[in-house]
Image (tube, rainbow, N blue to C red; front, side, top):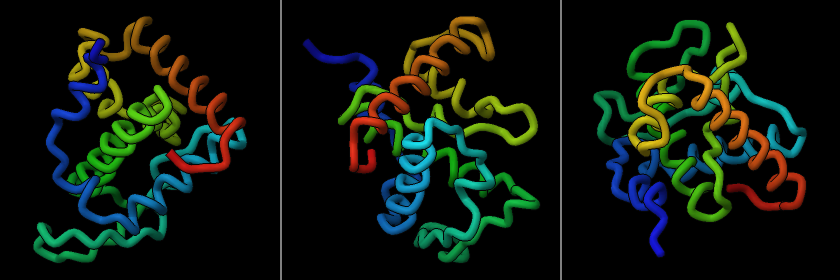
Length: 152
């Protein structure tokens, strides 16, 4: 029987996330490291110092200034996190992007909740159900990482 969440993830279009394997690997390694420590990771700590090589951008090399996020930076990171979540869900049954949170309040950005809505898991934003799903995927990621030596 097909998994409807996996089918929706596979059907999504990735504008950036599957276009730079070096950046993808670096992001996945940072997420895996946080998961192994049973921690969460801020968006800034995730992106800091990574140069993205994306031929579709006006300037194909982009390093995010984590002190002054721009809309394009959010779009790039969001797309990579969606693609990483496809890979982690496909292989291990969790959305890896659940581990990435805002330094302001320690919760995921609206992009995570948008992903949950697109997957048909919630109908609104930060509802009780959304918070439960977030906590569930964090726990799944931590459990998986504690038993694994490989990235997503």
